[in-house]
Length: 426
Ligand SMILES: [Zn+2]
Image (cartoon, rainbow, N blue to C red; front, side, top):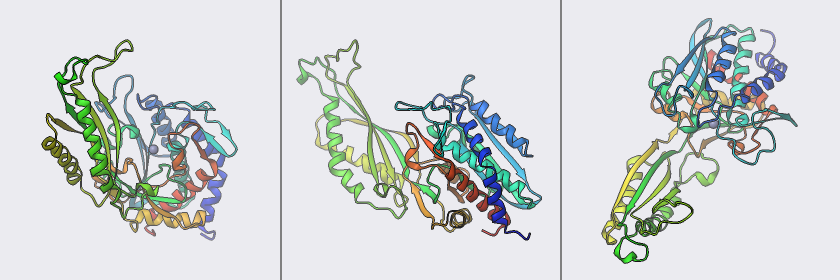
């Protein structure tokens, strides 16, 4: 080829700018709100129809029986696969199609996908339908670029990422959809800014602590034992004994924002005493108080150690406090994960960012988790990163938007990276 293949690709993507905008708008207009899991099927079928017209073999996978799945809200995932002219690796772009509730504070219709000042506004514009649209255009342009591509391209639209991914990537990974040799490299176009490569995320442990007491009339508290006061001792001990320790632990993971480069603990909720009815509090000494903690862990920590740290603190209270009893229940846990920044997918994406955007890419880790955990832990596929056009801080906010310029640039980065991976030149 006489022309620089990259220039050719970039010119083709520039020429598809309007198509990219229209595609992102069409995706945003499906109100795929989770919970409950609205409009999953029509959104998945829209993606499937488009890619099937481009020669992809399209499969729909219904994650029957997973949380939230029902006749009215079926968990429908779409996976499109196109094998190339010769054998080679499989590059997979995975996007979640679900979005969070709209919430208050919008000045524009969250599902109108309004274009204004070079931006597309709407719930999911940033997280992450702008990224999904960019990956589809990137792949379509690669196919149109005339080069007979070796290897296989895959695009998936999966559900329920915002609620843990059980009906989406978790379900598919357990059934081999995200394991080598079927798939070799994965890019997840989550909104992490157009010049950053996200190689992993911290881990999570959610747990519920319950303290117990004994009910009595509120006018004679000395006849009962107050579970809320026992919980107060738990919170006191968390603040005094655990939180300073966590703050002093620093990770080598490049987590952004840098405040999250430590272990952290949040108290997510607290419920104590009898339920209020008709606006009146119950005149009773509470016999139960429940507290949910959200502990984020670093790659240098291990889950057992994290749990026993909290258990030891509770055991200490059993010794110190008269009448103190507790239960500790696991709710949810995710191991921290971090891909090799010198692995093929991270290296080729970083090189593509240098070429397209002309800046040195930043390698980061996410403070929260996303579907990479399932691909790594269940799929046993380590060569996975997140890279996409959205601005991280805008995710889940009212008036969420994606910059059209960032979508165009990220489509160029994705096409360039995928090409290098397919040809083995990464
Ligand atoms: Zn997301």
